[in-house]
Image (cartoon, rainbow, N blue to C red; front, side, top):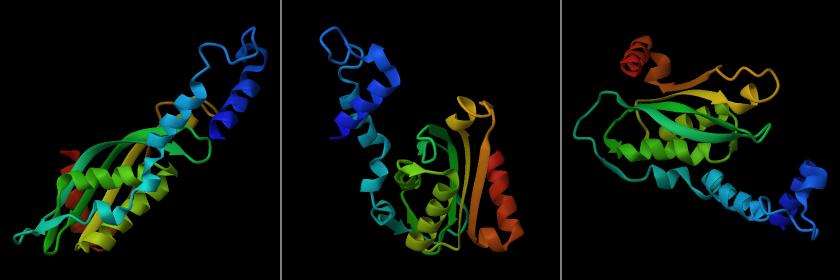
Length: 188
């Protein structure tokens, strides 16, 4: 069903050039519907993942009460407005109370939400909310910097523009000192 829909889109885009002399999709397009479906399984795999499952493996924090920061997490997402990609990096931080989470889980929680039809603001909020809900830290923060293909290859055509979003929870929202320390750590 989906493959047939993609084939129809290709026929609409390509007009006369999509079909070969036998009325079939030409060689270069023949397997495109199948490849698109396969790529979508990966690009939108975040719908099949539960943030709770991603953040459930915690460990004794052994009294650690400083900032935990994983910065420069590469991510790829798809804009829900134009179905074009946006890519960038995320900086994820929290201040634990009693439990810490494995470092890969901070990257995975970004992946859970970015592998959906999205907007950058929503990913930012969803990651911060998940950290707050499942880790119950003193504070949670995320800053995302991304370039959006919808800005570069169409419309205004400003391919070097970078959008930055942030969400601060707990002490990162309430205390300027905590925010300043976080920003210093990200810069260095």
